[in-house]
Image 1: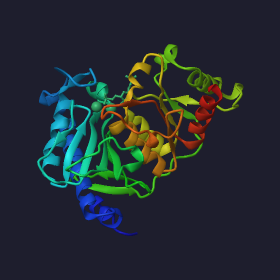
Image 2: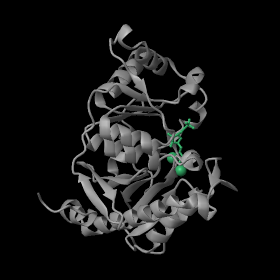
Image 3: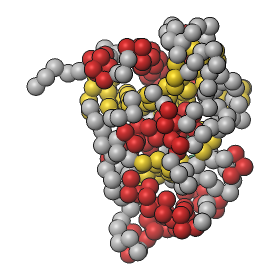
Image 4: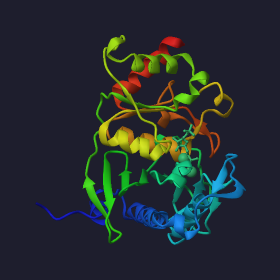
Length: 322
Ligand code: AHG
Ligand code: MN
Ligand code: MN
């Protein structure tokens, strides 16, 4: 058996450039620090909300702010990164350097799960920019790299440069160790994830898709389905990367005015790149998420992603409804 590989070994072999490897190293260090802070947050006075609201109109938790600050601190130490876009910052943050990379991040995803000790995560996307005339409104297909850290029973780091998706686990010594070189998302699955309390807002394709699943082996599909919803996108997508499934946050009558619930640049795009590189699919219901050209850094988007056959089945229902 060959020696266990560290993230650094993997980056040396897989990263398209040493600069990009350095950017990932910086982000991984931020994630490792967040993992450490989360472990003892309840007894460190870090539970609960602040009295601030972010640009999304959501109350920030103390740990949303702390995680965002950790990202900023690490990114400031890497002169290759000139811009940070964050869920927790109204506008992008420009570093005073000539770095050719921009990072978009949801520094703490699933923060409603913090007070109950359920898995949360950090999501990130890496873009190439001209520091003198940065274009931040690039479609997700232009991402140079993407990933997330899932802070669960162990801390996982999932990474892609667009070709394969690799999984790492944080060791007790604080080193990310490779545990899967090329994650593959099962094409078929019997698990779906949706907040079903929103049923009254759903459109016809979503309602039909879920009704077919619930009908199970007695229904037209003749197949049993199970429903799972953590309420942390990172945890739900991690489950899908590991064992298949579909994750839905479609456009519904309540989110139509906003364009959806989840954010394109730092939630949907990085997850789409990871899933596609692992053989999965990611759609708005009307096309590939990675093809959406953003008009705003905090833009929202409908999300249908996971096992390719399940995404295709819901896409077909959308096509039929046209
Ligand atoms: P965030 O904590 O970064 O605001 O993101 C929460 C997102 C996502 O993680 C999750 O899938 C979804 O919101 C949960 O939505 P519901 O509140 O409808 O369950
Ligand atoms: Mn989020
Ligand atoms: Mn968040």
